[in-house]
Image (cartoon, rainbow over the protein chains, first blue to last red):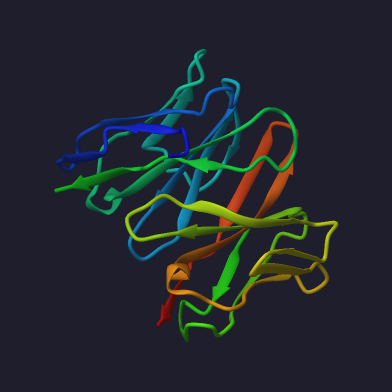
Length: 114
Length: 114
């Protein structure tokens, strides 16, 4: 157990819908990262938040948005869902301002869009 | 944009053999190179990492080498065991205070046969 929690574990929805994925980082970690893992691809970096602020963006679609709240938990919002959005979504967290902090991954949320 | 290529995509070895996985990266500003292991149905976990100011690092049966000039880094596993069977991801990225952006390779499925 990495100490990072994600809810829900599974999510099944229809095209065009909107969903929210939630992530709670390890106690004391200030950074939260979101990744998308599809069957035929590796881990695609979506976005990084540090202490409530957006710090880096990857190939995140405009239909996707995220935020980190004052208690440091984070939410990833996916809207106008398409079949191709079906994937495993991981969040990861890492520690304070020091460099080279290991990213600890949560168990993931499996999203299925029908 | 940044890109990380990883080879091979699958690797089958006999128990006790060595395994080598190779990655190349495109962003010359990358300064951090972690390797993650993902067992079936589980979360990725860091197994070893190397920083840009180091050429080689070893941890028991695992070693990583970095050639910054060629923008190439490799994972070496010696005396492989069946429990080493998993998907291995390399990553390259920039880290700074409160900032970390990793680009992952597409993964190598390692199968170690008894």
